[in-house]
Image (cartoon, rainbow, N blue to C red; front, side, top):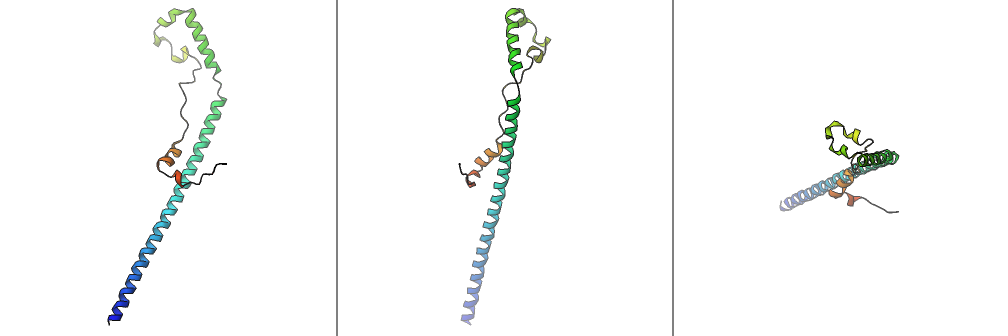
Length: 132
């Protein structure tokens, strides 16, 4: 009778150990699958950002802002020849009438949100990056 109890306890112990082992394997598999999915999504986001940035740079390259500089030159000459222009109320003319062809102040920064997210979430260390 004692021998049967010992075998019963031993079988229960083996089943518990096997259950914990299989649970840990399933958890590791799920974690690995989730990590691969996150890496794939980050790579897609970075690819999209790179294409968006390339498109933006291409449009900026094609944009000819020389008319703006010509407008500034003509404004400078107008201010030199007609100093009373500075005393004219500002609201009498719109900004675009005063400085035609103005392309705007500065330029928006390039999009790098997904790359920054990869850095700060420590996902970038999971990529195999090979320089060529």
